[in-house]
Amino acid sequence: MLGEEAVLRRVGDRDVHRGQLDRLRSLAELDNGTVLAIPMNGGSHAGLGIAFTLLHVEHANSDIAYIESLTSADYLSRPQHTRAYSLVSTDCGWPRSATKTRCR
Image (cartoon, rainbow, N blue to C red):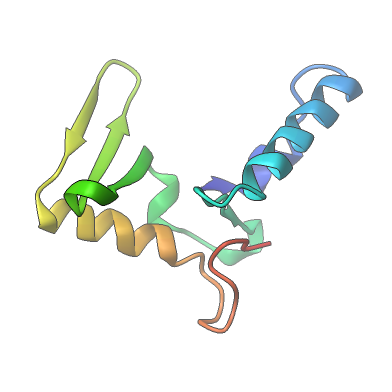
């Protein structure tokens, strides 16, 4: 999940920016992950306040939220935590009819 401004912000020259966009596109096309872009005109979104990765370990039927900040990182596995991150990651601020795999 990233804000639209992260896609628009150019870091490096045109070729570097193109490479970054191509990489995001290739990640979005994978079956085992989701790339969500929150539109700038969509207002505030809880998912933009912290860097996190939501993992599902299928053979253990378990969810884990991996969070990181500037100076630390942590794994959260309690259901009340993983449920909160799951709710944030599936709500891109679009109508429920919008696809969850690619919010554009």
